[in-house]
Length: 338
Ligand code: NAD
Ligand code: UDP
Image (cartoon, rainbow, N blue to C red; front, top):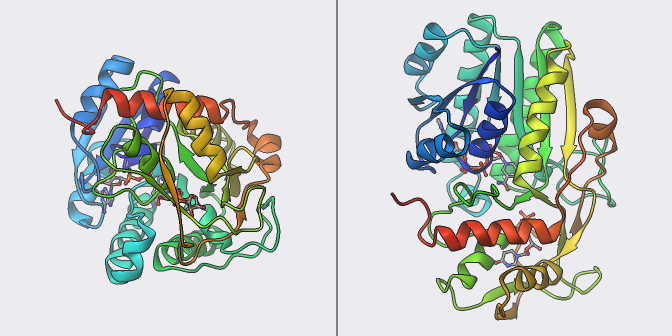
């Protein structure tokens, strides 16, 4: 049985990936400082899988306490989700983002080197493509970022590329996620944003649950099917499975690999809104608002490379994603509570 250390494993994507790893018989250790997550997640993972993973409440920026995890365990691979991810906040508090995302990753690479752990999956983002020259976007597209959050992702990708260049026995996957939404079928784990959600799906679910009055749609004059922004939404359980497939690849001594993880399909804001109404069975009021600064018309992936090299293909469609997001929100109107 291989042991996987999951940083940020109590968070949205991390918790779903932990469930998939346990389902595939991996031994999982979670490290998370609970900055953007809740300890209840551990209990929920147990209800779903029958297993409670070993959990360290540690900040990955705290080198000494982080090192204890490597001292106490024999780790085969690391999946590195831990990080701050709010684009708007990163513009106002850039140093917080550089500090947290870069230091935690530098500590991780240093410890992996020290304890001879050779396999790493890193959570990158489609944000590294900036405003792409065309869609769909493949992995060879130019990289340029437009905000400090995105810059931390690109800087970490660059660090890992430099590191892999001279450490040929180090296997590393840079996974560029498109827009994860949805939740585990059980409705026990899901996305649990603090405060006013920045992203579209959690905003819609909060309107549905009565926490927000209406959805503001940021612009209807984009060059898209109906004028609203188009994105590549992927079910978080598909994304989680993508990590398991990626590990299989790393264990063949892959060296450095980079994959887009999306569905390859674009969905507009209005299309997602309409699919959600269908899933919940009632109207979600909305108003057209001005464009949000920095937004682009369309962003969706070409996922051929991940299909060819690791057999990744998303199974769930937009209707499934809306159904599962609603199921999660309905069962947990206030997020994680006992
Ligand atoms: P999340 O906030 O739900 O999960 C991140 C977890 O990391 C949280 O539980 C948080 O407490 C923890 N964490 C943060 N800093 C830490 C530190 N220094 N030490 C220990 N734990 C720390 O976010 P998520 O949506 O699950 O995203 C996971 C990763 O995927 C992030 O790196 C994010 O940037 C990346 N990503 C997310 C999306 C998205 O839309 N959700 C898209 C692309 C990339
Ligand atoms: N969006 C919106 N209202 C919201 C949040 C988002 O209209 O309250 C739009 C946004 O302009 C974009 C799409 O929904 O076109 C997806 O936005 P999100 O922030 O979820 O993802 P990202 O833009 O980072 O890909």
